[in-house]
View 1: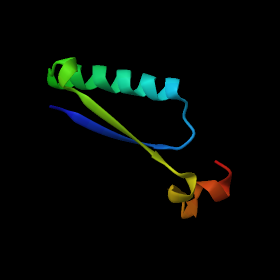
View 2: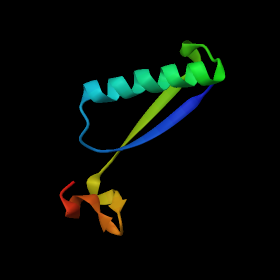
View 3: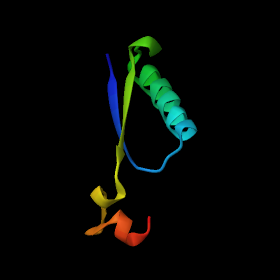
Length: 63
């Protein structure tokens, strides 16, 4: 059973997350030949203060 963990900076809509889940499911199923039913996708919403870019929290950069 393929499992993909996706880390995204918080702020994506439910529709965007749904699109990520669908796209990643299709890619994994095609790449490894697994049935779609066996693919799992986990999305982790990371708070901006916990996401660093070039040594600075994304929240401080206004991202």
